[in-house]
Length: 217
Image (cartoon, rainbow, N blue to C red; front, side):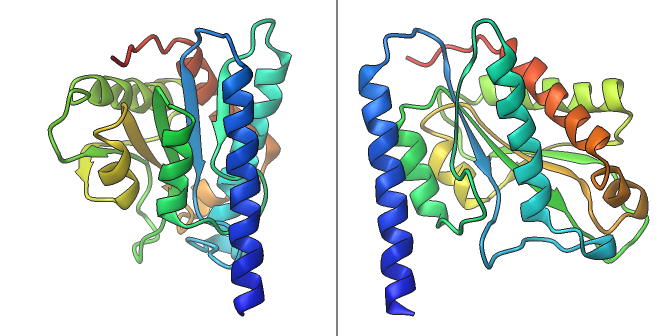
């Protein structure tokens, strides 16, 4: 167990070092976007219909985002908190985002409920008041609207959440946590079981990221 913990910490340290080196070499004035890929490793997150795992769904979505970004003539400045099925602590994720000097932080998750009829998208922002208390809700409402209008997901509202990632990042840059549907719902779980569904969600996210023009002092 000790050896596994050491290896995990070494892996994170290497990732952090690589990101810092890349950051030091860049001259781009693009807004830096950090996407937090929820859960990972032994933490599967929610497990839904047919064994669908939250960690796999959000990983698939971010993989598509990276592919789409590579196809752009002027790619966005996007980084992930994990690029593979690895468990990284929440505090290490926020440390990574801050070390990258993130201009926008988006954490991706999927929902679960004992009620199989529960469906839709929930978007969370930090409770605490900060200089980003206007910009974060603006981004949250834009995302919620896009998922509803473009993909037909039911909107469950923009809400205040006391999630650790929002507590640690909410005062640093505009930060949003997305619950991208319920894996306990037959329809939404099956939606993510198709490559079309994963790509559609990634496309909506990409379109909103491309249009992001927020400025952090």
